[in-house]
Image (tube, rainbow, N blue to C red; front, side, top):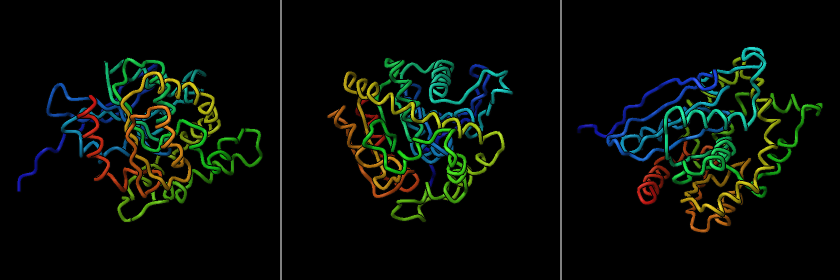
Length: 296
């Protein structure tokens, strides 16, 4: 049987403010295909979207960058960047805004997951004219969506005596794997490639400090929740929510809260954990395609 509709995927670098960012980009069949910007989470990279790009890349232009300090992108430090680089969610959003401008992307569907939610929603509130719609997968934007475990971790400060030990525990292979397999209905549907790839980068010496900095900065996102909810209420972007309801960090109430701000949003819950795409790609990819086709 002939094999058709397998997209070409380009793997490229672009320099933004002196930082080389790696990204993956699908090559769709049509020149006017809708564009989706895929923002990854912790402890992952654009690699987490590899199967989604294979599934939908023939019909849509899917673009997935690696943040600085993640994946194949540079991991600048204050010493390597002349004392000018610090890791914060504001800084990640700055670079993603520069990334969009460098690629001359004028309009896109924004796919946000985990860390991608605070990065992407910063971008959306800064540049609302870019956003054609919103796809949310376990990306939190409200207080009730945080589990007790998440709240405890977010509350850590550099002054806490156990902060280093708790962060180091989260950066182990055991915990990285648990983020992929935890809460799943069938762990055998979750390929080991994701957590082994993530752990490879986490174990590089220059990748430790960026994670510490971002963990300590995560509380800055909670201060923005009202702003993001206001943006959702005022703009009413077409919104699709696909959520692993067994996520130990971002709980089901966080998914349902989007309906309070965007009543016409579509919500689909799955019996899986944090990385819902790993187990339920065959179910989620058609939902994304249908949503984009109807709302673009």
